[in-house]
Image (cartoon, rainbow, N blue to C red; front, side, top):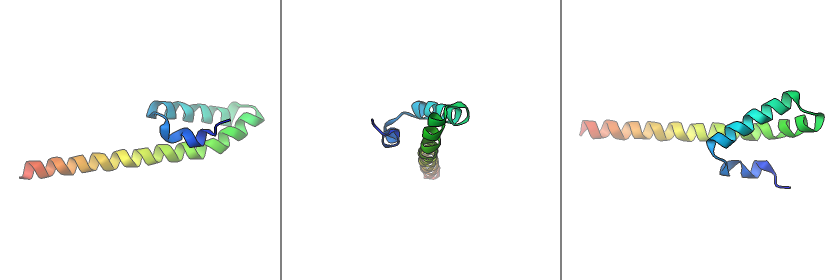
Amino acid sequence: MVDLRSRLPELSDDALATLRGNAERLSREGTDKQRAAADALLPAVLNEIAGRTKEKNAARQERARQRKRTKSA
């Protein structure tokens, strides 16, 4: 079986958000086995989301700096 953690970087943002929701739900409402799996996966999912958010924010700030430089010139 493929470990989902290794596939996280390949997932789209929407798929990652869906996985997060499912993991959170199973962490609360699943069987003992599902809860354990969700609890093990959730930190990696949250870390991937945080990393993507950080990258997007950095790119957004860089584009804003570029626009500001263009307007100043």
